[in-house]
Length: 92
Image (cartoon, rainbow, N blue to C red):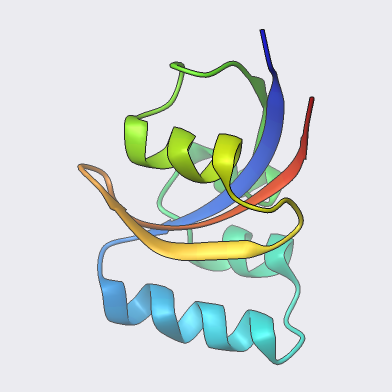
């Protein structure tokens, strides 16, 4: 079964996610922004979610992590939790 590792930033609004994505595009550090802005408990680890298998995250999240290019920030991705910026670190 494939495994992946990813990190994310979770915020309440699409506009907030878009502002953070622009900061990342301008060279801001993902981990620093996650610690400062993310609503997820993973914020303490700079947004790091560790390793997981398909099906362990919500479908919209899985679709990014297991199908989109790695080491690229994707989003905003809407889930029932809010809006995510997601970066897949690796996948096998």
